[in-house]
Length: 161
Image (cartoon, rainbow, N blue to C red; front, top):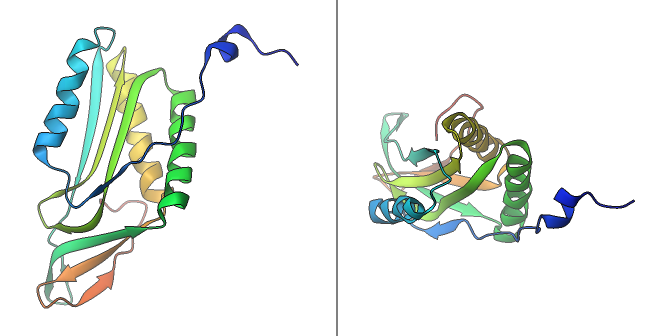
């Protein structure tokens, strides 16, 4: 079966490494946003920043979360999610960065950034992307207490990062 003109012009994207060791710095986030100012076809951006909370579990305050993953499996899954979002929404670009290792309470552990010609597409894509990352990406976190004891974090569909 012959490909359509649109299919012929689309280059398949390669899986991108989304993982950052430790917290995602405010400077990194600001630089990422600033790089898009030269793209004049963009009319809207949507950004989600996931921050480590200092929850109290059984009387102990969470001081950090230590994230781990099987990198190759996670990157393959992220590529599938990324391609599905690009197929569904008319985005100009989409960026995801997720921390690995220890991230202290108050620090950023997830940065999702979508851009499109119109704000609604950017916002809707960002929201769906965050929900899919939370539900499907094989990344696990240990909630670490001041005592250095820990419990494995369990995400539920309506729970924030």
